[in-house]
Image 1 (tube, each protein chain N blue to C red):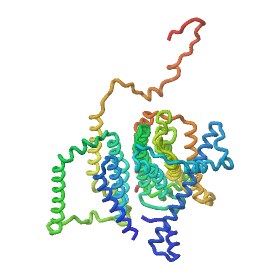
Image 2 (spheres, chains in turn green, red):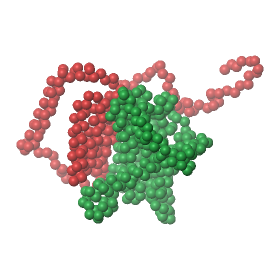
Image 3 (cartoon, chains in turn orange, red):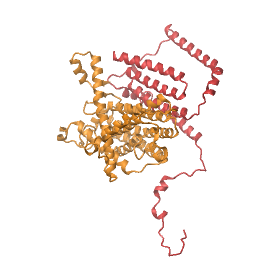
Length: 354
Length: 205
C-alpha cells in the first residue's frame, strides 16, 4: 500500500516526525477532497433542480442570490435551524446513526478516485474492490433508518432499497470485472492509464471500445438503480410510501440523507468518468489537449455524467418494482455474464495476457 | 506507531463488538455488532498486508451475508419472553459445548508446545512470490495449483443454489403474471380498432 507521498515529505521537511507528518498530511488531503465534494453536492442539488425545471419549462430556483445560486445554502441553513424530532417509539441510537452512516459512506469512496496522475489519496492495489466494499456498506444507513423509525412505511422502503441495491450490485460487479480484465489491475490509476490511446491509438476511454460500450450503458443504468435515482426511486415513491425511509426524519438528520444521496450520485458519475471515459485523460490522444490540467477533464466528465442523470430524472417515468427486479436479475445479470465471457475470450484470443 | 495504534483499535473493537453480539438483548443490535466485528476484522487483515482478503471479507460478509441476516432478523416477530424461557433449559448444553471447545483449544496448543506437532511451513512451491500483488498471487495459486478444488467448490455451490431454488419454488395458479416479451411484441393494431358507428347504433366488439 502506498499513499500519496508529497505532503508527508513536505511536513517532514518542517521538522515533524514521520508518523505525525503522515497523519497530518492524510487529514489535510481528506479535507482537501471532502470539502470540495460537499460544496459540489450543494451546487449539484441546485443544478439538478435547474435542469429539471428547464425540461419542465419552469424557471427553477431563482430568488436566493444571483440566478438562485445560493438556494442550496439557504435550504441548508433552514434545516440546520429546525428542531430534530425523534419519535418516542424509535430506537434512538440507530435512528441517529442511520443518516450518519449514509453520509459518511458517500464520502469514503472518494479516497481512491484519481484526480490526476498520482493525485490520489490512497493509491491501493485493490482500489476497485474498495469501492465495491464501500458501496455495499451504503445499504446499512437505509436499513437502520427504516428499522429504527419503528414505522411501517419507512420499513417497507428500507426493504425495497436494500433488495434493489443488492440486486444491482451483482451486475455492477460483473461489469467491473470486464473493465478490470481489460486494464489488468484493480488499481484505479492503472485502470485510467490503460485507457490511454485505447481505441485506434486515438480515443482515450473504454467506452469507445465496441465490446465495452454496452457495459458502459449497463453501468450507467445500474448506477441509477444503485443510487436510487429516478427512474428507480421506488424507495421514495411518495404515492405508496409517504416519503420513503426518511419519513420520520426532520432537520439535519433528514438533510444528511439528502446530501448522502447526492454524494452517491456524484460518486457514480466520477466512477463512470474514471472507468469508462478515461478519467483525468483528455478524450482524444491529441498532444495539445494535455495542456488542460487532468482534473478539469475529470470535472467536465463528471459534470456531463450528472447532466445525464438529471436528464433521465426529468424525462423517464418511474419503474414498477417487479420491472425493476426483472431488469436487474433477468436482463442485466445474464447480459453482463455473457460480456465477461466475450471480453475474456477476446482478450485470450488476441493474446492480451501473454 | 500508527500500525500499533491501528492494531489495538481494530483488535479492541473486534473483541468488544464480538462480546456485544452475544450480549445484546435485541437481535437486530446483535447483527449490527456482528457487522462491526466483520468490518474490524477486515481492518486487521489490511494490517497484515492481506488487502484482497480484507476487501472480500467486507464485500461478501458485510455486503451480502449480513444483509440477509439483518433481513431475516428484522422480519421475525421476536418475542423476548419465549426467547429467554429456553435459556435455563439449554444452559447446561451450552456450557458443555463451551467446555469441550476450551478443552480442544488447550489440547491443540499443548500438543504444539510440547513439540509433538510440527506446523506446516511455506515450502518452495508456495513460497511467497515477490513483486506480485496480493490479488495476482492468490489468482496464480487458485487458478493453477488448486484449480480442481476451486472448480469443484464452484460446482457444489451452484448445485446447492439450484437445489434450494427447486425445493422452495412453487407455481401459483392464482396470480396473473406478466409475460414482458409478449407485451413488448404487441402492436397497436392488435390491441385497438378504429370504428365509425352510425348515430344511434351500438358497437359489437
